[in-house]
Picture 1 (tube, rainbow, N blue to C red):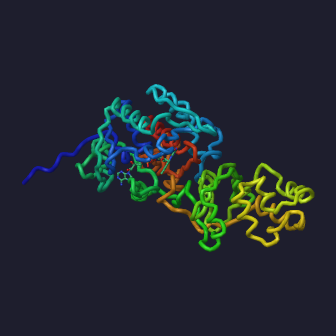
Picture 2 (cartoon, rainbow, N blue to C red; picture 1 turned 90 degrees about the vertical axis):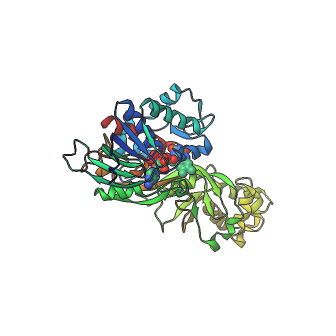
Picture 3 (cartoon, protein in one colour; picture 1 turned 120 degrees about the vertical axis):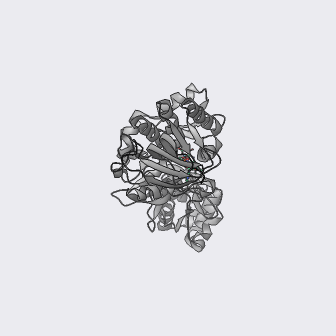
Length: 411
Ligand code: FDA
């Protein structure tokens, strides 16, 4: 009879070597814990690699820790306050500076690596080396089970393709569901369910929106056009708006404006867009009517890109004439349609294109100080698997770093 394979013993096993898992492993290892970091993908941190167009928007200086609802979505954005107040953007920037990684601010507080996202990954791996973290990768996780209380302080058994491990602390850092082709899975949610933790329904966030094929036809010719807008959604009571750039695509709308609002959008409800937020369009058109012989499209082209002006006037015969001959009513209708363009998306481009997953492990299940599950001592959830989703602009990574640091400090 061959003797059974030995069981490996670690203080802490972290599943998922992405942003949160790597940082948690490094911090826990440097605190003296014996840490094993497991990922089923061949490479660590694929999402950091592709983030920020390859330069990683690794945090945001504008994060207001006192008002987390301003930058985070979830059933209780206040949950992230404790972790972020202990490990905020300044702390992560200090680490980036310590590693000599040059960075710059783009706009709205967004910080990017000057050279490459690989520098951030190399930094996290160096921090893991300093914490003597053991890596098993690529390595599938087959099953996780709770151990009997008398198992010498070990609480969990993790069965993997490289063997069986026992540990005191098990950290779920498996991220969200977006971009399955680079390794996203639902393992984290399944583990949470296995241990009786409630989940908030998951939907794609920071994602382009799609519109009905025939209804979209008049706008398809605008593909590639980008312009600053004010975009909104929601009822009066919980309305959300963003001032960002909008991008027309062949299938619908994208760009920062749409990505941001998508995290707040409820299927079946409309979004509204002010395509000319800086100008009083009605006043401009009525005044042009008094002094111009131009076609409405040409007059409009002084306020919006000419392609947009042409596509807009094509929607109504009343708008296809010299502005001097147009009725005030028709011009006011045109102004209204440009400044309050209301449309109902048919859906989103889904997890294939989403940057994040909205929803996840219900924050009521976790300690906001340590990320430990209240009813399962030793089990922790960090990063995107938790029902905390950041705005576009570095907030999601900052949540990954902060929740990882809180978890490592609490183990
Ligand atoms: P993350 O996804 O980083 O890591 C999860 C890890 O778990 C992965 O390594 C995965 O392989 C592993 N895993 C999953 N299932 C497993 C299983 N069954 N077994 C073992 N391992 C498993 N955010 C931001 O702040 N700034 C930015 O610039 C961007 N840019 C950006 C671009 C694109 C294209 C995307 C898709 C996303 C972003 N984001 C972003 C979001 C950001 O990448 C994301 O929120 C964080 O990576 C989340 O960190 P986590 O560690 O929680 O998950």
